Image: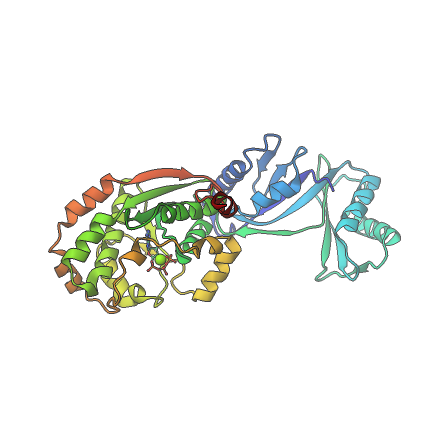
Length: 405
Ligand code: ATP
Ligand code: MG
């Protein structure tokens, strides 16, 4: 079926009052961005809906991109026909034949904004319904919860027909929630937290701590490739790599083992906060989940969070690991997250980190270090790259295997 346009219904708009314009403007911008390589497509954002005119572009290709754009509640591929009964009937039949399966129920739902059209909504519902009955077997009408709703919209310029209601990604358009940094490791949790931040409309930049020569290029590339998967939801994401080896070596040399982890995390959070401030962003996001490991007890969080008053948002804080994994699978980050390239935390992880570190002790031990010097040197070594949707940084596994032969 050759669809001519897509009708997009907005998410969470009802209570947003004066922010409505910003919401729609951002959404239109984000849709334009993900469809930038379809020059034939026209995007018309209106007060209540957005119309994407395909002008020959393939619906299924556009559909792949559109389902990852936050701020879209539902959307329907639609066919524009001329304003005659015959055109309505024939196209309705074609659409129904394509999507109908025996046993399904349906109804016809007509809306008119052109009140001068020859037939009113009741007449059209009945006539088109009768026509479909005549030409299709097994049809059953159901008014309350039909499996298929054939929607006919009579507008001034033409008539628009659709019979699918597809679910969009929901959430808010990326950018409407402001900008923040996201602490991204190569693990399972922080990519999921990134997805949830983007879903609330927050535009994120990734901060990743790496520790060459203790960590490999592969571990860094894994975090970049995860960013590429998440960039599908926002068009592009900046990736900020922060060298962390000197800090880890110094802490390991000078502090008691029980506080290695707490103090490392305090440095990470300080660095994240400095970078956030330099880049004019409002909050820090991370992938911590309450009680998951020693560094994520409430006592640990308190001892780590002590270094800043900036909001630290933890989207997966109260989710079970199984729930996080389920989402990771859905968004396509799980398989990459479980690749065993160790990051800087795994390598310097003490065997018995304190699960109840004390804030005073952490401060006291830290006073033995040149905190400012360490921070400055790490900041002077940061590298920023912009990562695009599905950008690859790890060699394809098949390619690698072939190279070994
Ligand atoms: P994840 O699966 O996200 O790595 P985790 O369960 O392994 O989480 P930790 O390794 O304790 O937990 O890390 C907790 C959080 O700290 C991570 O979710 C991430 O936000 C941040 N973090 C940990 N390591 C790094 C890193 N190398 N670079 C940036 N952020 C990190
Ligand atoms: Mg981790």
